[in-house]
Amino acid sequence: MNSHTAPLPDRRRLLTSARPMPDFEVVGSDGPWLLRADGTRILDGSSGLLCTNVGQSSRKVLARIEEQFSRFTFGGAAVVQPHLQLELTGRLSRAVGRPDDSVALVTCGTLGVEVAIGLARNIARARGGRARADILTCDLSYHGMSAFTLALAGNHARRPRPADAMGLGPAFPAPYPPTHPHDSGRTCTADCAEEVAKAIDSRGADNVAAVLLEPVNGTTGGAYIPPDGYLRRVQDICRARDVLVIHDEVLTGLWRTGPSLASRRWDGVEPDIVILSKGLGAGYTPVAAVLLSPGLAPLLHHQDADPLPAMGTMAAHPLMAAACLGVLDELEALDHDALRARGERLGEALRSLTGLPGVRDVRGVGHLYGVELAPGLLWPLLRQAEQRGVFFYPFTGAGDPQSEGLVVAPPLTSTDEDLDFLTAALADAVRALN
Ligand SMILES: Cc1ncc(COP(=O)(O)O)c(C=O)c1O
Picture (tube, rainbow, N blue to C red):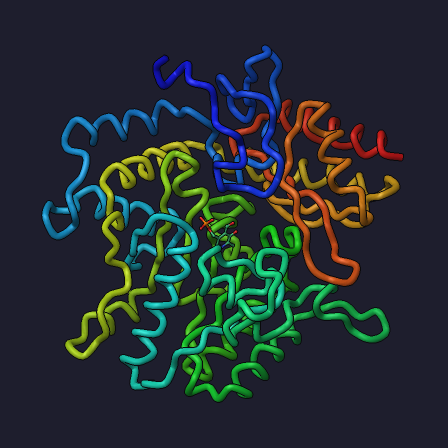
């Protein structure tokens, strides 16, 4: 019996997701569609954990990987010239409108966040703030699955036990209704940034290296968008206190929400450090890129600076860089006007679901939406949707009772017909619950 015919081990031996695994095997793909062994197909409305933004099995990505593969497959950045990684540094920083940034490459979003924190601490200390170690996050946030990033962030579904916060934990309320309620029905505004000022000042700014936040909320709350002016106010508050601003765009970066970075929705928002990951590897390679603004990078090279925190074995893998260049080839070849228009149409169609019983709220932008449901409907709705040929990612967020719903995030390469199918199937699935 060879390895292809041996029976598969029990599913629980693969320690990956607590969710039941799909019981169908995927044997092919076509744009956002996954083709099953039984001849049916299912539209992946989650882009495979929000990353297959340019669809599956791209020939452009394959060509890039093959080209590098036939040259050589691996060599540490200190052994062979990291030519391709330098090409990626230039290409990526130009693509997101930060052409002079320095870039650290690592292997996943979690590590990108860890490296961003390391860089922020190095910079804060090089600027003379020897005590500056604290990283402040909000209570509706997810920044990765290492013990440290779980401890820092506010996603309690992923870190249910307070003891595992190691004395850390979120420092300020997110500017969204479930975690920052206001009297007399008032909703959050840019003024909610004052909570960030309070959090920094109560620690003492001299102890704080950076504020870390998702410029548009991802899967913790389900695609909440901050009030206009909020991110700019947070930035001003931080700059006045010599605190750095880190944007976690692991999920939102590279056109997922419309512009190349989610923060580009608002004028004058220029974080010191940006983390990209999911849409950069697009499912072809594990990767994250940490972008650092040019005014700060020289501080890392000062003779008294701490060691660079980005030196893992796989940090600058040439095949990883090749795949990312192929993904950028795909992303830059998109018709961005048409992409924006499709995102708006998708948003309109989804927002029209708010009239249906069980749908509490629809929020989001571009190709990223949260459809919040009445408690208890999430898993039945996911099943109904799958029966109609669409797969979504669930979120279980904040509040009491905890909010829950679907993240709707199809690949950016989806056609109008694909998105019409998705929204019609979802509407039908919602109706089937009532
Ligand atoms: C906003 C955000 N940050 C960080 C991460 C962690 O990325 P990874 O799962 O690649 O480690 C995620 C993953 O979902 C995320 O959504």
